[in-house]
Image (cartoon, rainbow over all chains, first blue to last red; front, side, top):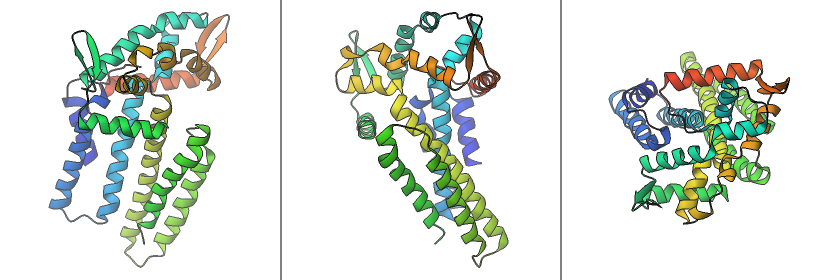
Length: 140
Length: 156
């Protein structure tokens, strides 16, 4: 129930944005609702329910981010819409440079990057630095 | 005692990540499925022999099944992001102030993804033209349905 309320709020009531730019809102909303329910009702197996809540948060986020970012699924859509004879046609139709700009813009909107004097830089706040250090550690 | 399953499950993901994924970069392997099935079976057997009410046993078994499936799905997604996400590569480049070295081909890897579409049987070539297989059509329909239903903005 908590999970569905969070999905409803973030997917249907929020402005249409890239999910990973509002992942933290989704996470905080979910945890806030979980602890509210935890305080109001006497839940059985609280720790297990909490782990289940966390796993749902991450699986849902993963699905939405995957659908939003999937290049494979975008290419599939492209093949379906167009008569593609050679692989080169896919390159032309996909337009990597345009997609790159779109991703950078999404990262700017998500406040991971910022633009000043026509120069794009990394937004070095605590949250972003932590995320980047985590990614770098996992990617090593 | 009922928490042991959850601790082992999370521990397994950590081990799988550092011992298997880091070594060969595979996202999915059959060892994961085997662990999931064996872990769930042992846990269900253990819960069914606990001296608690039947309704509690059912609740605990269902919780363990739903938890396993959703956390496994989340784990696979995390692995996919770490090894393939183009946005992560862009972010890392800006974070390390190496944005001028960004190679767009490296981020999108279009050729590799086209081969993936062929290999996974999503598309095939007929009369010099790419056509979607039934599997490809089903995945595309689900993809478009989710995109519209949940108002997802596509950047991929």
